[in-house]
Image 1 (cartoon, one colour):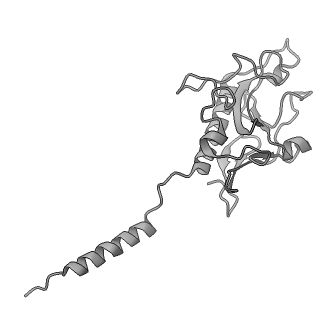
Image 2 (image 1 turned 60 degrees about the vertical axis):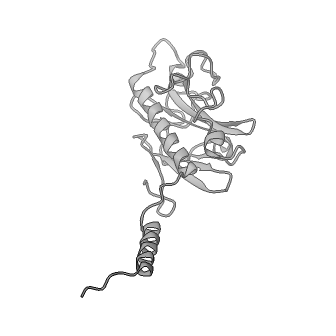
Image 3 (image 1 turned 180 degrees about the vertical axis):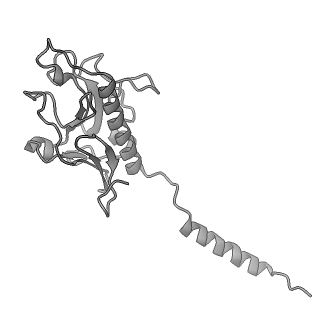
Length: 214
């Protein structure tokens, strides 16, 4: 005669399965900081794509290299975010109408300070809105870019990365020659690091333990 499970045994088995599932199955809940990093990497790569398909070389314009496509990170009125644009009107670093990259999904300019979309990292992902929210560290940058609330990744038609443009005096100024990192920090103090590699301009999120690309 076969012995059947009792109700208590069935309940115990269900509880054990539930505990195992909670431990083994990866969490699928939202991680805003990681989502922010994924979006930033995606838009860095989009900036590089724009630069490679839209070569700005103009033999008649001595400052043509300042028009390269760039993604600029900054803080304004307690908001950390970024804008993607080509400084094609006056090459003075100002962002004018018609210079912003268009988001193919929304049809709007990618500007966290104008449209207040996902490029507004503070409102959307909880990135700190002070000087520590976004910090860029490139080996050859001047002190203001290393420690301030702003940073730039620009690209040429070969996809090579640069860390600045508006105050450059030659076509090779600010060419990134070593790993260049961008750190995002949220309001809880947690941070994630994004790396842009020299020459190739490849962008990735770094593992917090190994400091290698995920």
